Length: 285
Image (spheres, rainbow, N blue to C red):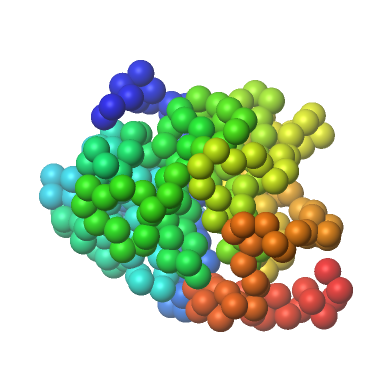
């Protein structure tokens, strides 16, 4: 690991944040929660209806996995793959969604060219087939093709024009409206929003911050596309909703893609999206 000074950030808050970050809208029949675990490094898979002191249905762990210290896991339901951010291994490791036991990754993104230094947050854009990675303690977001493998350079690097804070960790993609959300995990925290296709030094489109937001050390986030809601894990679980945020958007901004061109892909990635979105439109939301 290149950044040894930050090898164990905010471990006390990690279990809640990791489970929230890994909760996904699964394809039919795959009602599961996928969560990374630190000691020993593992990925644990539970039934979505879990309750109480229950063992995982299966887990990915052991020497063959290559995992050193993990802080995030997410699922690509279209390709049926699990992406794991190996914080201390400076790598992204990819496994089959049904992997169990001491199994090697299908592929890895790792090496000097990748610029991966303590990866701690991930998000994927199913329409553009891109993976967004947040390195710990930096103001950058690295973007790779979903099928990237080996010691490969990012396809682009977003560098925030405003500092994101040493504990900035979470990224969330809104593929329907071409936006990327990034947390600044400070006592007076914030969520910055960037164009999804941004590269180089970029100013946020807008920033969510201030006492009324209650964003105290915001960590993991989850976006509910069907209901236009953003869930943020801070000192409490916050539900942030602003139906007017799309009013007056400049669709000519880089990274803002037409929603209708992306809808069919999102419906396949999130089976419940279409029905919920149709109801929301009918209600005039």
